[in-house]
Amino acid sequence: MNANEPHEQGPQEKGAGGWSQFGSTPPRPGGFPRRDTIAMEMPPPPPAAPPLKHRFTAGQKVVAGLAMAAMAIGGGAVGAVVATSFQPEPVASSSANTPSPVFKSAGDPLTVAEVAAKVQPTVVMIQGQTGEGSGVVLSEDGLILTNNHVAVGAGQGGQMTVKFSDGKTAKATVVGTDPATDLAVIRAEGVSGLTKATLGDSDQLKVGDAVLAIGSPLGLDGSVTAGIVSALDRTLNLGNDQRQQIPPGWGQEQQQQSAPTTIGGAIQTDASINPGNSGGALVNAAGELVGINTAIASEAAGGGVGFAIPVNTAKQVSDQLIRNGKVSHAFLGVSVTDATGDVPGALVRQVTAGSPAEKAGLQQGDLITKIGDKAVDGGDTVVGQVRGFKPGQQVKITYMRDGKTADVTVTLDENR
Image (cartoon, rainbow, N blue to C red; front, side, top):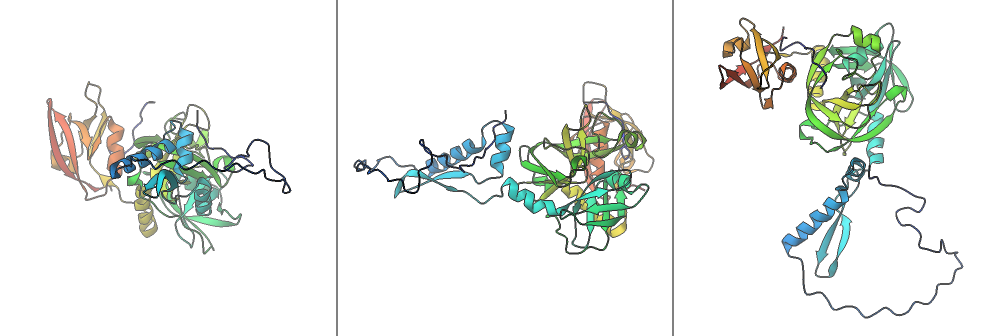
C-alpha cells in the first residue's frame, strides 16, 4: 500500500433534564391558590441561631465550589453530561455576611436551544438528481463547505441546488473538490448577506466535550442532534466496506463505484448522524464549527457511530480550494502494510527512489511504530497522518530495524 494512497482494512440510562408546565419550581401541595384566597396568619419565626464559628478557608471554598460543579455534571449518564454542558452551572460562594452557601451562575454558556438557533442559519441542504447532503456557509456571498462525495453525488446528472434555513433556494456550482480528504467547496449563485459559520479550534477538543450535529438527515433539513466527543484522532476508510464507515448520503450503488480513501485525525461522536448529514456542521457548546460530519460506522443502514473531519483540516483544505481550485498534499514515498508480529506498526514494503523516505534513510523491511506524535498501529495510520501534514513539513518517524529502535526526521515533499 502506498502511504499516499488508501488501503483496505478489515472491521475493527440516561439522566436528562426535564420540563413541565410548572417551570423550574413545582407547585406546593394543595394546588394553585385563587387570587381571592386569604393568606393564613403565620406564627412568628423562631429566634436566629447563633453564627457558626467555623468558616471555610480560601482553599476549602475552592474545593466546595468544585465539588458542587462536579455534582452538577457528574451524574454518570451521557444525557446528563450533554444537558448540563450547555447550561449555566451553579457554584457555591461564601462570605462573612452569608454564612450559608449562596448559588450563583459561574458563567453564561449557551443552552442547547441557543446553540441550535445560532448555527442553523449557517447550515444548508444540498440537493441533486442523484444525491443529497448538507453544507456549511463560509462566506456571505455564497461559498459553502461540504464533502466531496456530497458535491459529486449531487452534481451528477443535473444542476445542484442549495436550500437555506429560511426556505429559499439557489443554484450552486463546484469551486473545487479534494477526494483525498473528502472535502469540497461549492458556491451558491446570486446570493448575499448569508450568515457564515464561526470557526472553532478542533485541536482544543477533548473526549467528553458536548457537541451538536446539524444537517439534513434523511432529507429532514435543519435537524439537530446532541452528543459528546466520544474519541479523537480516528483513521477512517471510506468507500470500501458498506457496513463500515458509510458516508451518509451514499446509496449502495454509489458506495460500490466510489474509490476508497483514507482520512486521519477524525473526530468520533455519539451524536446521531444519518444519511444526509454529510457535509453538515459539528459544533461545540459555544456554537463554533469544530468538524464537518462525514461518515458513520454501522452494521445496518442508518444510525451508528459518527465521524467528522476536524475543522482545522477543513479550513486548510477549503482555503486552497478557494484560492487554487485544488489541494497540495504531502508525499512520503513508502508503500506500507499492517505488521503481523507482536509489535504493532506499519511494515515498509517498498521505498520510492528519490523520495523523502529514501533520502531520510528508511528501507524496505523497516517497521514504522510512530509518526509525529501518533503511535502507528497499521498502514492506514501512516496514510492518514501523512495526509494531515503539509509539503515541506519536517516529521519525526520512529521505526524498528533488526530489533533496534531508531528515529529519523523526514522533510515531506509535494505529492504530484
